[in-house]
Structures are given as C-alpha cells and as structure tokens.
Amino acid sequence: MREGVTPADPERAAALELVHRLRDIVLRWELAIGEFARTTGLHTTDVRALVSLLDAERAEAEATPSWLAQQLGMTSQATTAVIHRLEAAGHLERLRSRTDGRSARLQVSDSAVDLGWQFFGPLLDRMIASTQILDPDQQKLVKSYLTAVSDALG
Amino acid sequence: MREGVTPADPERAAALELVHRLRDIVLRWELAIGEFARTTGLHTTDVRALVSLLDAERAEAEATPSWLAQQLGMTSQATTAVIHRLEAAGHLERLRSRTDGRSARLQVSDSAVDLGWQFFGPLLDRMIASTQILDPDQQKLVKSYLTAVSDALG
DNA sequence: CAGGTTACCTCACTCAGTGAGCTATTCTCG
DNA sequence: CGAGAATAGCTCACTGAGTGAGGTAACCTG
Image: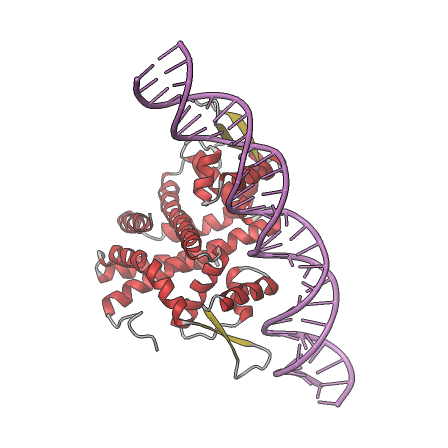
C-alpha cells in the first residue's frame, strides 16, 4: 500500500527516524502547553504567547504586539485580544515604546515568570538533565544539528 | 533583573541553549502547520490530526477517534468534529473496527497523503538532508538524545 | 444476563480568532 | 518643510472551533 511515499532507501529511512523523534517532541511539547493552559485557566495561545515573551526577555529583545503576532502566526487583532487577556490576568504590562510612538513594549510580570517556572521548571530540569548526559563535544554536535533543522524549517 | 530564574551556571546555560533550539524547532513547526492549514483551507487542528494519522499509518497502528483525541489533547466531541471535517473534505474515511463494534477505524485517503506530501515533502527533504550530513554514529547519538528528551517531556 | 464501563456521538452554548475598517504615528521624497 | 504613503495597533461585528451535558450502542464482568 502506497509505496513511493516512503521509498525503501535505508539511509533515508534512518534519517526519517530522527525526524520522527523530533516530531514526537513537538507533539509532547504541545500537549504540555495544553496541560499547563488547563491547570492555569489560560488558553493554549496565551501560554504560547507567554513562552515567546519570556524568550524575548531572555534574549533581551524588545517584544511588540506585531512581533508577537508573527511568533504566533496570528492576525494582529487576535494578538491584541491575547495581550488584553494576559494583561487582565496580571501576567503582562503594556508599556510605551520609547523609539516608536505607535508601538507598544510588552513586559511580562513577575507573576507570569513564577507561574511559568512552577510548571515548566521541572520539565526543563529533566530536559537539561538529558542534555547534560552528553559531553561538551557531543552537545556541540547536537546543537549544530538542531540549528540545521531549525534553518530547514525556516 | 530576575536573577535566580537563569542561574549563572555555565553547564546549565550550555544545556539551556540546546533546549532553546528545540523550542525554536517546535515554534517553526507550528508556524509551518499554520501555513499549510491556511493554504489548504483546513484548520490547524485538522492538519495536526492528519499528521498524527499519517504517523499511525506509518507505524501500522490502528487509529481510533479516542486515540486521536489523546494525541490532540482535546475532548472526544471536538475530535468527532475534526473527523467530520476531514471526512467531508475527503481526506479521511471512517471504517468499522473489526475487533470492537463501538470503535471506528480512521483511514487517511490518498488525497490527504498527496496533499501532505506536496507541502511537507520539501520541508521533510530539507530536514532529512540536515540529518544525512551526520555519519551513522552521530545519528545514533542524536537519536538517543532526542529519545531522552521525548521521555523527559512525557 | 443485570450492572457497570467504554467508545462515540448529538445538542446547545461560549468565546477565540477573522475581516473590515479606524486612528495615530512615522517615513519618504518632491 | 509638508503632502501622501506606510506602519502599529486598535475596535466592532461575526463565524465557527471547542466544551459541558447528556445520550446510545457495544463490550465486559460476575
């Protein structure tokens, strides 16, 4: 049934195996996001937004509504709604941008950081533990691989 | 600002770096799903469902509505709706299970396989190419790492 | 074969996300 | 400089995806 879709090329099959593991990670990550959303009463989109915003903060990049919209793959209106929800929940502050009068600067509150840490902390710890099994050279290898995959997806 | 959240532990920082790449991959994958959904007129959930179903087929596992609901992290009712949408679009057939009269067997149609291949094919090819740069031993290393991360998320 | 469980479904409803269209600020170039 | 175009973000009205409540049929267990 349906040959050709997965050709019997052993090299390719081995590579596909790896790709599947990655996809499994994506799936599990999404489920974790969903579970976090359910326990906190937030929505999955809100959680995804928070994660992106925390990332931006860590990278010390200025997060704006339009930037967030792009990260979420949503329209600016939907993103406005997300921001309002997070603001109402006290997880986000909307400040004025100093460089552009039209734009806003999104600042996650301490409560959001705590909340995220509480849930994703243990999860992150386990992921980090999995990583620290590898020695520096191995980590470097995996890192360059993941970067390549990331580029392939971009 | 907010020390303690990212402690100045160089080992941990290096590992976090890797975790971030993984999360970047998750984000880009989600955006790709969204783009595919937009171009095909499907919904992101429908696409996620299709991907899961194709996976099940590849693994030769029997896909049922309840199994799918679990994969998507959604209620059975919402999953019923997804199945109906995919069925109406001709991407899915709902067959009777032979072992359990209550259950249904979900069978993706050729049109869905083609559609998926058309969009995800090039993307998958690039991911596979990134993988094939590695030699077998390196692939094995990455694979065991990804498996460990997957377990950490489960 | 009665009582309980499981798999899936329908119905009524809510609210997240979209399209249309607005205001205010910034950029561009004669 | 100043008019026109572009950009950032917003409100409003609406659609439809997902949920909770609750139903039916098939299976399991004593």
